Image (tube, rainbow, N blue to C red; front, top):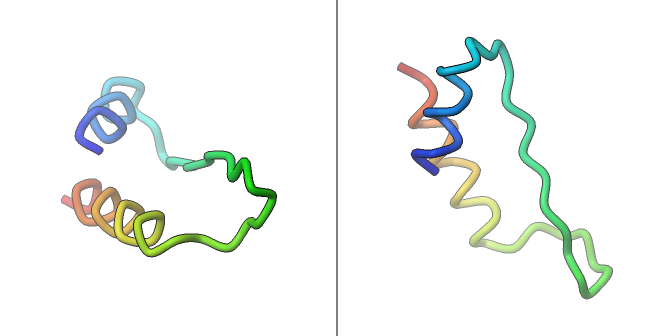
Length: 46
């Protein structure tokens, strides 16, 4: 999580797009997916 925000800041990014695969073929986000996304959003806010 910290690495994602750090790299975005290094690049002066104006947006972050998060993507990962679901080998099972079911694209429904898991609780872990949602929680990690919330943590990244919170870290990037300031």
